[in-house]
Image (cartoon, rainbow, N blue to C red):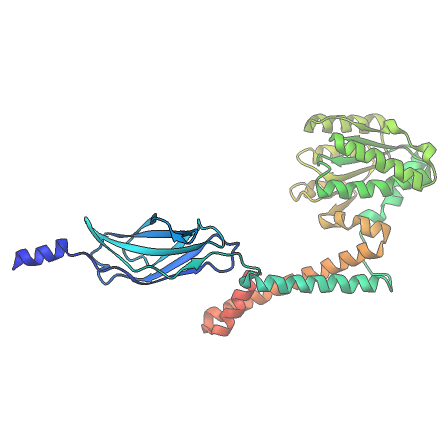
Length: 376
């Protein structure tokens, strides 16, 4: 009797898994099919499962291809190596020692890309709200002047240029160590144009040493355009805008040397800065110049705030162009962004409250709303 039981245990194949279901993986770019099945009744004694796949080629099924060996107790597998719009079917082999049994084939499944990720609906709603804010303020900007809060550092440009004129000293404009592809550098160039225009109106020289060769070319054109807009192209000196050094501290030392020799009445530090920021700001402070700084580098802002007279903090630099030109469309963009930021703050607070309520009440409605905000 014992031999019969032992024979049955060792040599009778395990029962295969059943109800094999294959479906396209939802909300993706295609190329994936998920397979689910009911565990074998013999799951507790089998060693593992092997997933096999067949592909339809010219109306015929290919030879079975081994995809994965899975441990017992597993009833899900994601096939992420599929071709879109190609038919596949699967079967699963239950292994026990050297014997096995195969399941029936799954249904035929086809992978395809989704047009829309349904779980990202909240993002779509947020984008529509953002667009609505922007369009609303663009429409308002065409009818009336939009209010933008005062940015002291930008209002002080005229004062700084005027002081240099009174002292008979040049202006020094430093664009930092950023490249032309970086937004702080572009923002710095927009401020440079305004300063150059004022320099032309006040008939004062402006010196612009550059760290990057491409920024140097852009700075030349920006300064030239500023003098032309002021109606004084004759005052533009090409040699005052020059490439200084592509070495970080070589550039800082060169700028410090210009400060000490030329003793500018006003210094503008506008762009992206690194460890050289305090060196430049302290040297400018030592010669008694008015300094207007601005950067998006969070680690350098404390040094500028401590050592310069006025500081543009973070996004104030990005708003400089709209603030100085008072272009209606640019102002509308700034206003729209401000309202969107306020909306995001409200969403974060609402999400925090809903998370707390969902945890305490276990209410499915609050869980739905919580998940909605999580996707955002």
